[in-house]
Length: 196
Image 1 (cartoon, rainbow, N blue to C red):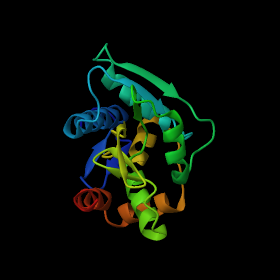
Image 2: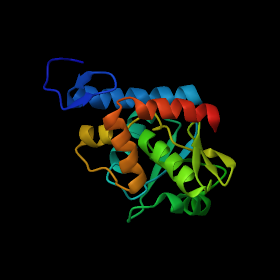
Image 3: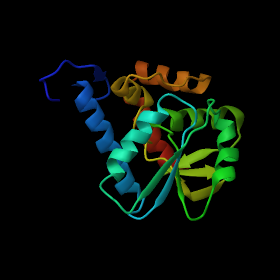
Image 4: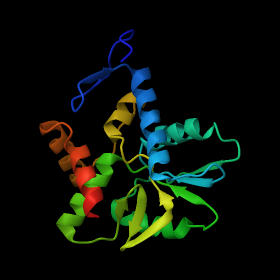
């Protein structure tokens, strides 16, 4: 975008080559737009960011912290989980920390959303889904449990902040699909939002 610095990442789906600074700025803008478009957070929310024990969680928190720094009435805290969490464990963790007075933010990305959908198709278990940035546990939408990262690919965040991204069979499948057909994750996401 800026052409002043060396590109560190090329978005095959759009053809954009971005330097680290422009990639970070683009990710922050995507998250900010998602928050507004899906009405995920309010100006006076008490937010608990629950880390899922992945390296990308810390930069995801920094992105949210950057956005919410414009709203001094927002309370933002991070709850760090030491070991990586499997998708099947997320409902338990949410139930354990769910407080009606607080909004829970989970670092689940576009590729996570697609991987969770693949997991649902494979196992038939609807224990965990995302709908319009909100967590759905066993068919029940949790309005106070959100992910503003649903339009960000975790690999982009990993490159921008120099951290490893999590791996599991469903994520690998999502990445292979995106590598073979750039833009596939976004196409699945937009179709998924119409179906779910």
